[in-house]
Length: 119
Image (cartoon, rainbow, N blue to C red; front, side, top):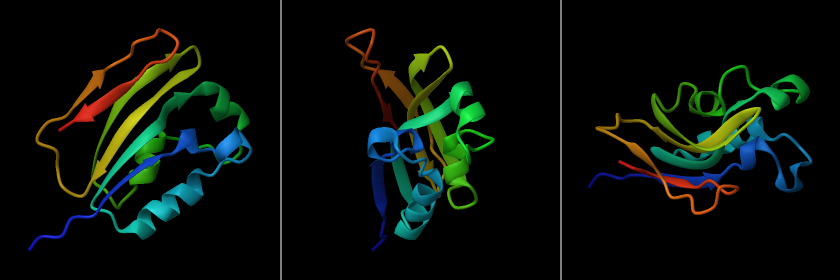
């Protein structure tokens, strides 16, 4: 029997609840410790110029690539929320390649963009 470990997590753009602490490094460590084969993430920052200039420890590349690092070789990002200084959305990290994937916009309100992945 093949065993598959799947994890899903809303990373809140790398911040603790209430945005008091930038916790992306801790999130990365916990994801690795989970030994998940596939990881589904919400609120992953693709780009944020404001935080890049003001948050100590902000990653040089996007959060998806930082979290995937050398553990999950295959990853995909779907941009959902777009704002003046950047964007964030969903990400999938996987040990095995995706055959195909798609991010589907399900936004109902202009001020609250939403989407989900299919693969």
